[in-house]
Image (cartoon, rainbow, N blue to C red):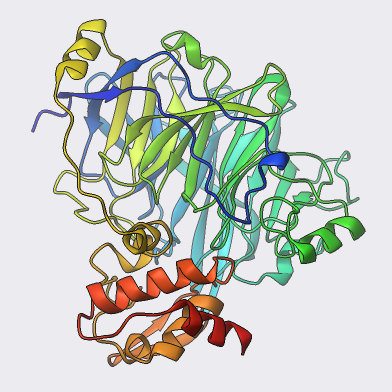
Length: 506
């Protein structure tokens, strides 16, 4: 297989789509405009056969340093595709979204040859997240030193690491599926932590003697510095309001009392009593944002200062342009869309080329993935005018027009239960022929209120949180319910608006 084969991908700039509904108040958001300049890009496969390359960093040797969720840290020559293993961490506990995750290199590398990583461990029944510093010597990572160990869970462990311009280590943690952690400043879960590079507490932190820098976070998945020293984060919401935030000292980001903007009555009450920092952008339906990087290269001058964002659920790369101060998003375009599966990490090379990694061998692959060559690291470079003209000359692909129920199912349900409704064995239950779907009242109640904890479906046990969809109007709940009951279970009758209203009133 040719690891350096070139695959053309074409972009005609896309308009940002705002979802109509009560979660999105246009008065609260600045207009986000599409770019007017059509742009073509090329994607080159640099490496394949990887096991979820969760984080990438451009090394001082001009190689890509990357983690794999299964526990390996390696170097990759982006010109030849040569890979060199640096360490295999045996104590990494890989389960669902757990494993070897974030990584950052010391800014004085190689004078101070330190590599910071975080990963999950399990001893008996206790799961923890460790922040560990390795030392690079003779093409190996050795002498692991644990800098911090905090409680973890089967999900929501966050785990991005970046080094700040003032040379502090910023470490994003998730709420560890315990929502009370996020607002508890005595807990290090659901936070952005700030520490000295030797692991001590900096004197300038908002809480004396504590690593806590900001709180009220659910599950941060991306962390990057941009213009004017701004620290951006991408964060997973629950059923609504994935977020892009600007992280500030001592600020509260609201979870679990607030999702996205302070736009619901109960959220407004909390925001009135506690100063909550709202996101600079939020997405409903959710997109599962992952890695972020700020583009300062020359290859795409029109993207200067923009935030590059990979997504898992939507399987795309997004370019979020900001204003000159970096405080608001002015446009959103998608140069790669649903071609390579879930996209996890992103980094920018000194020559301005962009590298993204796929995440198709993780716990929740999209339909048709993983492919035999997964997972991959891809290089994105600029296409040519001839490429764009050739693309424009091609005829439009004729697509069918799915029902609104099918669209809503894809937006809110398919990332877990999958487009075919069959789920993933042991992780997400099937929707075919289950008692929970056949019992209309129970099914509507589940859609409205969600589920949490262990359940048994068709003799198989599941233990995964399902978010409540009660924020959707009755018409949308009815359309989703009807689609599932009739498309996956043809013998069942439809769900009516009256059925939903009856269960909502209970």
